[in-house]
Image (cartoon, rainbow, N blue to C red; front, side):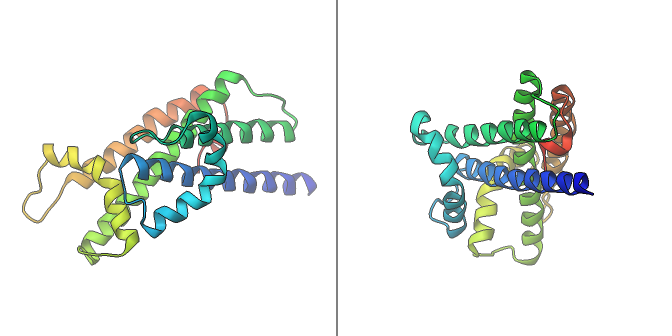
Length: 197
């Protein structure tokens, strides 16, 4: 019974860490897509993640350009440390370093793909029910997905009222998730449950 409670506790902690990494990668993508920094939702994400990101901004410096290396480093280190901690608590010992590094990369890639996956679903629903929505959340989602939608729209323009680009992006997200992230998780040799949401 105690062992089962311990396992449940570890999985809960791992899930909370994965949610926090999800927020870190959301912050990274909002910066990369140049989404409205003053949007209340952007501000909330920054406030929640700043305590951890601030530790890395000290030596990686503030954001330069579109890519926030401090946020990426924060997510990577948090994931690697959490995997080490879980391995130590369950008494397996230190996992292989290469596997840890690969698991860290897989975790960040998994979080980024999940963000785009959910953002695409919300964007599609919004386009049906509220195409001209001005809610801060709706605006932020449109700004977030536009950088991945724009190149696809150039290749596959809308057919009248029908825009096929979201379908292509969905397929691409699933392919990358299945092939790239799946391969990374297998190469890491660490349980997929520890890597992603």
